[in-house]
Length: 93
Image (cartoon, rainbow, N blue to C red; front, side):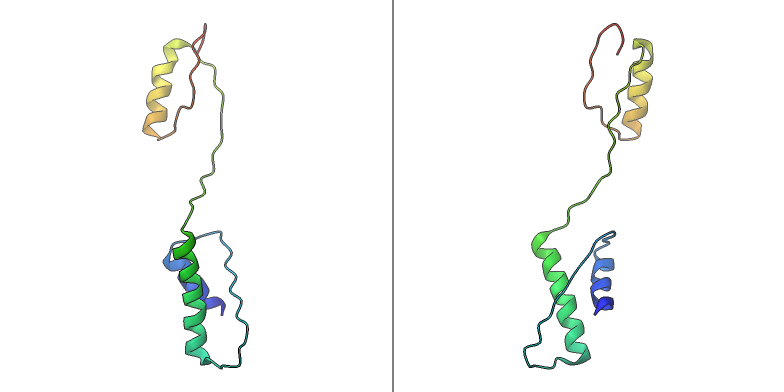
């Protein structure tokens, strides 16, 4: 049962996730192919209905710099796609 579920997760490029599929036996034997389809479909349907949320690890830093260094820092952060959340101007930035 794990391989069909894992293949769906790989196809959707999902990492660091847990997928649990529970099948209650209702008296009908599905056979190997039927079980593969059942587990794959359950996983695919769940992903389709719930969607994918990307987890982004983020760390907030507070920096104090001189005014003459701000443009260099801002340029670097913009090139690295690092957002500046807040800027406070005092005798230093």
